[in-house]
Structure formats: C-alpha cells, structure tokens
Length: 367
Image (cartoon, rainbow, N blue to C red; front, side, top):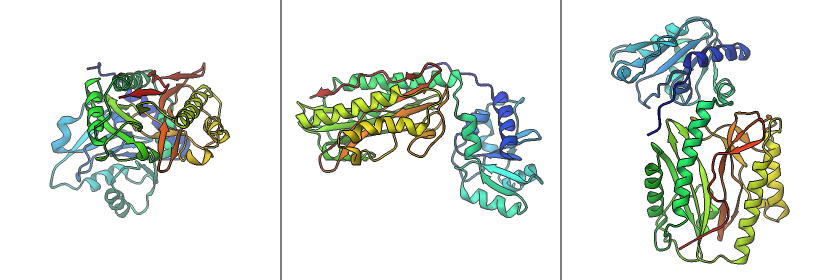
C-alpha cells in the first residue's frame, strides 16, 4: 500500500476563493463529486442524507454532514468547521442559513437534483450556477503529489498489461477475461477498479462495449480498456491484442493507430491548443482512409475523476499547460469486423510530454 499523501487543503481553499472572485461567485457548494475531496479530503457517501461543504468567498468554510457520518471525517480545523446534523434536523435549512444573503452560489454538477431544487425553493433570491468552470480551473494543473499518484496508478495498470501479454485468451468469454483483468488490477496495487472493457472480434468496433458471453477465439482482435485508483487518483489505459497470427489488413490498421497515438503524444507541449493535438492524430488516420472510423475525441483529462478537463477535441481552443494530465487514445472501429485502440495517460511538462504509461504499444499476439 502506498503512503497516503498530505495535501494543502488550506492552500486549495485559499486558491478557490481567489478563483471565486474571478468568476463572480459568492459561495461554493460541494457535495457528491470530486470537488469535496479535493477541497476537504472527505469523500461523501452517495446517500439521501445531505453532505455539503459551504465555502463562502468572504467567510469561514463549513462541512455539513449527517451525524452518523461525522466519525468518517478527517478534521482540518484550519480549513473548515464540521457541523453534524441529526435525523430530525433539516440540512437544507442549515445550508441555507450558511449561505445567507449571498447572491451567487456555485454548486457541484453531481449534487443530487432534489437538493438543488430544495435550496432554490428555500433561497429564491439566490442565483444558483454550475461550479464546473470554477472547479475545473482549480484542478486543471496537477500538484506534484497528484502527478505522483497518477504515475503510481499508471504503473499498476502497466504491470497488468505486461501480464496480459503472456496471458491465455482463447476459449474464455469476454466477461471472464474482464473479471481476470479486474483481479489483476487490484493485485497490482489499485484500491478500486472502475471498469475493465474486453471487446473481442466485431465487439471491438464498439468503444464502450460491455463484456458479454462471447467466447474469444483464434483470429480475434481484443480491445482491453481498464483502470483503477490509487488514493482516489485514476488510471486509464487501453491495449489491443490479437489471438493468433493477424491478417495483413489488421496489421495495417493497427500500425495506423500506433502511429497516430505516437504522433498525438509527441505533439504535446505547452501552448498548443487541445484541438490541435487531436488534429495531429486524426490527420494520420484520415490520410490512411479511416477517418470515418475514428468516432471519438482524442483524449480526456484525468485526476480525481476518470474523465475531466482538459478534453482533446475539435473546437477546444484551450492551450495546454505544464501539469495538465490527460489521455491520448486514438482508435479505428470497423463495424462487423474489429476495433483497435491504444491509450496512454500523459502529463504536459515544460519540456513536452511525459508518458505515465510505459507498457509496449507494438502489436502483441496472444494465445
């Protein structure tokens, strides 16, 4: 088990208040979702009982939490006060009193709708807005300790990829192989495993295929996309294997994806627009005649969420900066035939790109 890092939550909340000033936000409300652990170190359970951090721009922060959950909270008295509410109390009234007459409240996107509706009814003079842009601005640039956890998570799934290169695929169902990948991911050091896509043969043409009872056999391409967490920080990698000797046309498609993935990663540097990195990889696939079969963005940010800003997609003119973490994952999906995807998590650095995933990207033939 890796050592639990120590984060400067007071510093994060101070930066949050500066950012709130820039966005014209008077109070931030963080409930379910990654805002809460990022700012307080506490991960709320998804309960019908409200947990909410109330962080005013001009006052003390308070974590409102059900009394039965309060023992789970690690206290940071220099950052927030814990206010535990009992079963017969109304947490909406408590939060409303903490918000008071503040005009603009930013609320986390994953807050249950019922809580937002009740707050709107209780505070008709308050304008409620999404906290997405505010919290994305806070979390875009990863701290060194965050990058260290992302690296550990990536190393764990790289060890799984190495095991898969010598693993036996033929005769197993997708669902069984997915369970094996999940078990390996835990064995290699991830505390939770979010997903393990196993898509064989024609199923590989569906990027988010749900593993089923299809039996993997000779001649199948097998897309395996999986990830887990280390102290809340995510990994996400994809490697595509082939059972037995591949055909020439399969090798061609695989090589196009490999070249596009390498070029996309190599294009990463400070100042380049997110959409330009997508275009570098996409142009290679399009030039090879497969542009219509690359059907998703090149990449997504990663951290406390598996998918977060920045997104590498056409139309996103955001410039990359050192400390941003995201995936590079081009794919070609040929309906009724097969799919190929290669995915690494990378960090934008002052010098260019730092690939967190180091497992081989060359075509791997398995039995």
